[in-house]
Image (cartoon, rainbow over all chains, first blue to last red):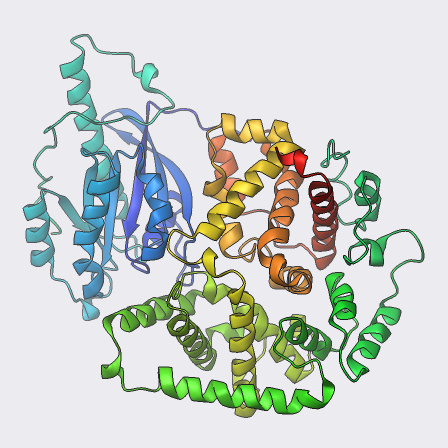
Length: 217
Length: 380
């Protein structure tokens, strides 16, 4: 069994959001290019990794997919420890899952590192005819909260790579800045190997990423 | 002494459990405990026909002797048995079917009538009458039902979805301390499969292509009611597995950790040195009783024993089964790092497992349990 240790940085990311919004399929689409319409509910947590190039470095994303049901939060919140990024997922065809985003943000505030990078993800964007949350609405909510946002479809792959890539680059940029400000001399990247990077400097979160037309567009 | 339970096992898992289990058993199993020894120890080879006759004789008595049935069911319903044997044994052990034969018919029809009333009271009310909480429960159940897929086509059928929706919703409303928790949808499926097999007089293996539309609606009504009551009986003993914080499950995970540390310290050290927490991989084992790890035929065999163990099967004994299951993979796990272990344990290569392999686990778990119970200091 080969160990894929060939990376510069390891970032721990959590996938959170209501039950049934497609967290597990986002993960399987990103890490294995698979989608399963009948995938079973996640009990506890599941785990996958993928290495991607960011700014010439290889970033290994260690992604923890959590169960969405409220009852599990006592257990899943333990998995926020050490996470430097969170994909906060809702289903664009389920209004309720968007309305619950507030509660998930609170959950992160209570249990995660205060500087965790959060990306708001409106999944199931292929269900256009069932849309219950507009892009504008999501964009303005994200702006209010100081989050970046994006719409994805795990079913047809739309933006899945982009979403993960975006959060990983943002974490990387944040970390590079911090490394620069902490240590005048560039540190050996190898020194970071194998451990999740903590991005804990106050107020370093950059304004939400604005690609063409802002969030979600 | 239970020194190296994994020794030589990878080659012999398909073989009967007796050899390694017997060799390792210091203390003698308690006399009142039925155990693997009754079916698989020294003496003549397993005779399914003899066992079938014993089941038959047990059911034919005026009042079924549950101790006798317990012993029979513990070591599994033989493949050759009429499909109704398992359904009946489960229902008797769970306290659903009356032990007095003369009361069985009236007893069942009374419970089925009661269930119909519950459906009226809890489910058929106008949706406007439902509280926010009830709507939320129903929403969660409806998210989970279409993805409850224990490998049978009929679980994708709308009629079956209706059955699951009603049973799970009513159970959740009548058990507000836990309510519906994801995974309970998995737990009702063995009952549905076993009871369907019984009614249709088919082996559960032959139900894979079943069209639910071919099943008379009256039969479906009975199965629904029976499954509801049996699920309720089963969950009644393990309520705190699904209440806030899931203390019952946390306790089992902790106990698993202790047991593994005692029986295979090298594996325990390997797991912990790699930063693996028991909760990370065994939470699901406890929440769904290894249903996500095994094919249905194996789950059903496992449940023969758990149901026979009565109150302790789904809590205490299950932990020993998990310990044996984990240690079984020790040779592979010890070669892996954190990531490889996590991925491996999310998808064990168990799709092709047969009930015989479950019997091996059960036999070893039984020995382990006897060992720990006879000398509790093992754990201190």
